[in-house]
Amino acid sequence: MREFGTAGIVGLAMAAVLTVMPAPGVGADEAPPPASGQGQQGDRPCVLIYDGSEVACIPKRPKTIFVTSGRYDGNLQAAGMGLNGLQGADNICNAHAVNGIVPPGHYVAWLSTDDKHARDRLPPNRSGYALPDGTLVAADKAALLNAETVDLLHSIDQDEFGDPVEGQVVWTGTGANGARPVTGYNCYDWTLNEPGVEAGTAGATSRTNRGWTIQWSVTCAAEQRLYCIER
Image 1 (cartoon, rainbow, N blue to C red):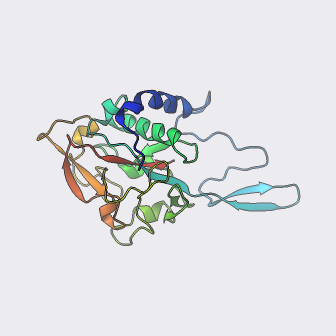
Image 2 (cartoon, rainbow, N blue to C red; image 1 turned 30 degrees about the vertical axis):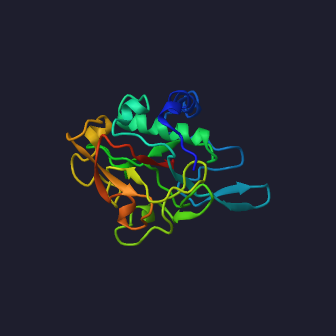
Image 3 (cartoon, rainbow, N blue to C red; image 1 turned 30 degrees about the horizontal axis):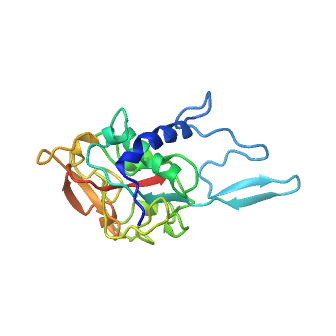
């Protein structure tokens, strides 16, 4: 199994940050204007294309979700050179994405903090989420957030290269509904790696039930993986 170590993050994180910079005049959370011949699609599961005679609905591909091949302690701010823990984790995800085989795009880490839920970091999605090899994990965003009741279609067990990542622990700080389960348990908003001070909620790559995102409480000094999801 190939692994992407912390040492490789420094250069690639900077490259990833440059890769995902919005175009001039476009905000970080804004989509670019539609290409010629396409209307604003919103949350439609397909792209409407007009060829001059009829409108075709071309299905959108699912968003990609993967597990990082590298492991990081609870201070994700430092590991990803971010202004805060979430930004550092996102930098890590995008560095892995650039280095791997996943489609180009902007990836965010599946993490919650005391004032930000992981689910709120993802836009609406009715085209689903799939692993790098195309295996469907969830039919849409609602299904991804419903593992308390209905299992995921497949465990999230491939890294950015499409290699299997089985039985591994993943930082999340997030419950099955995509929200932080309780205040804390997120390594002080992913800025701490000291043992015995605080812990972080973690999931398991082998689980399809709620355990995919909330299975254990782990010391912040431990090194775990991240889930990365294409926006």
